[in-house]
Structures are given as C-alpha cells and as structure tokens.
Image (cartoon, rainbow, N blue to C red; front, top):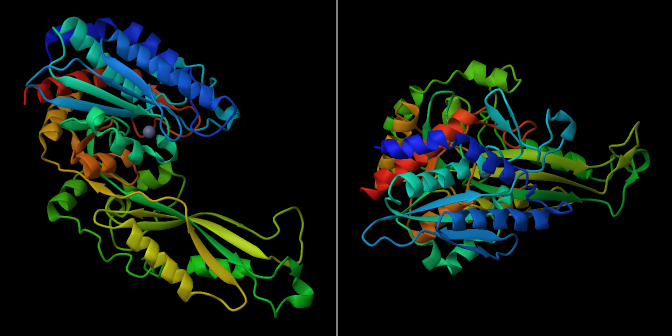
Length: 458
Ligand SMILES: [Zn+2]
C-alpha cells in the first residue's frame, strides 16, 4: 500500500514534475549520428545526473563504447533489498517532420497528453520513477528500500557495447531485481506486465553476378540475374503454410503452455480491429493456423525489411544488374540460440547458390530472447503496485520486440526484470506525434512508488 502522504505529494507536485519532464524532452538526444546528437547525449546525461543528485542519490556519468550512461544509487539502508531501475534517454529520429503537429523537441501539452519525441519511449516512462523517488524522500520519511538507476543512451540501436559495460561494472549494477518501464499497456485500461521478449538477428543477404551491369538484350538468357536470384531466395524462405524454411529454425522453440494459451485467449483482443488499425484487410503473416498473439509473441519469425538492387530511377533501363541485396530480420523466442539460427540461414544460403552468382550472408547483430519468472517477488510487487495505481489487476503478456538489457541482466547477473510498461498502444512511439498520456504519468509515478514500497517490505 502506498502511504497517503506519498500519494498526496505526487498529486500536489504534478505541474512541477511535468515542467521538469518537458525540460528533459526538449533535449534532442537522438540515437544516430545526426549533427549535435553526441552533444545532446551529454546534455541529457548531465540533466539526469543533476536530477539524481538533487534527490540525494550518488550519481555518475560514465563512458561506454558509444554514448554516456548514467548510474545513480541511494544511500545504502542495511537489510533492505535493492531495486534497479533501467531506462534509456536516447530517442529515434523524428522524421518526417512535416507530420508533427508541434515540433518534436518543443514539448506541448494537448488533450491530456504531452507530445514530444521520447515522451513515451522512454523519457516519460523513466521519469515516473524519479517522481516516485522524490515523493518517498520528501513525503514518505525516506526511501523504503535501496534504489539504483541505470540509464543508457544507445537502446534504440540495440544497446551495442552495453553488455560489455555491464560486465565491467557488476558491483555498481548489483541489485535484487530490475524494473524497466519501456513498454505499454495491452490495451486502453488494461495495465500489463510483459514477461517475455523476442530476440533479434538482423542479417544482410547479398547476391553478386556479372562484374558490372550488362545489357539485358545482348546477355539476357545467358547470364544469371542477381535480382532474380535474390528474389527467389527470399521467396523460398517461407513455405506455403507460412513456416520459415531455414534448416533447424524451429528445433529449440519452447512450446507455449496451455495455461498461457488460455490466458491469452481471454485478453481483450479483436484481430479484425487490430488488422484495421494497421490498414490491412486481414492478418496474413506468420504460421497458418495459429492465433495472431501466438504468432507475434511466442513464435519465431523471419521478415525481409528491404531490398536493394538494379535500376530504380525513372523510366526503364534494360540491364542485368551486377548485384542485389536484402535486409532480413529474424525474431527469436525462448530457448532459441542466435548462433544456431545464424548457422541455419548460412546453410540455407549455401544450399541455394545459383550458377554464375555468389550469395553471402553478413550478420549485423544478434540478441537473445528472454523469458522471465512470472512468480518472482518483484513481479508480485509490481502486479500489486499496478493494481493499486490503475485500479485493475495487470494482464500478463509477452511482447514480440526486444529490450536487450533485459536478457543481459538475467544472463550476467542472474537477475530477473519486471517490465512494467506505462505507455499506451496508440502513443505512436518511433512515429510522428509521439505522446504520453498525463494520467499515465501521474498514475505511473504512483505505481513506481507503490512498487518501491511493496518490494521494500518483501
Ligand atoms: Zn524504448
């Protein structure tokens, strides 16, 4: 239970908290190398470190392989558990700018939302935890447990180098559990805890043929065409039932339990409305015969993300191109090993070589899937906290996307995370007009504070 004084403080301080969040949102801490992005990352890190210091936490801006990370910890209370809060200050590029109603780095409040790039993903969500710390410090007689923060600046590109950083700072990062608010409710009014994420292996498949583009009239029929070969290879990656044909692809997939299947069947999910929200007439992807939530959450997938090759300018150009390539991404589920999947796609490519061309695979990165303990103490504390703040028992869901540190915490530290998402499915993260509902900021800060109280009392 959240003490009334803490709740009252969070309610009384809403406008000050919102003003502080808007300062944070105004920093254009873009993840890619746009001009000024590195300076903005430094500014966002300093802003966070200053915020942690003003809450009485020890904080430090630390170098990683790319952008600074911010670590903070409260003064140690002996005998109390330690809760780690992870988040990220980096944001996706805001383009196309003309689609924004207000500029992405000039936060604006409209119709009960704050609009800005990063409002939901992830500055607003992580800020709810700072509000919770402040409320306990100022109105709750001090924190009910030990708190640490780990905020990084390269999550949006898969947290490169962060695994090494974490391995090198095990003492600073040690805790009893980690909470991550970087996900969303299953639906409006349905608070949710995510207990599994898919892994990701993006690769580039390149087919090379003649030394340079050649005349399709003179040489067509004699020389293999890399675009044709690539297209056939991509088409062959799925069978008629939508199953991925990469050798061994499904070998290690952990089957869904009956209990989970039943629970997912009871979620308020309307496939037709979901299809309509994406602008498609029906849900035609994935393995035939399986429900859409299973296809998104508990089954591995392979998708072509883009194709490059041949002549693409105005009018025609009658050539046989010398090369073609495709970006492919594979999403992995529990028990699949990225290295075995890479072996599988490599052997697929080897088996599908076409005379007169050479096909090669380059692995761009790899991250493992993660499946979390649904019955951990932190999980129970978060369930009760969300119920107290939002008035409804949270749904236990999976998510098809990845937050790489979740798996790093589990594998390197033996620490299970709680993914307590505060966003809504229509917050438009990564899209124009990203927003965060103010009611979710207020109630989210109550949930964060309640989690601290619940876990501290464990
Ligand atoms: Zn995020």
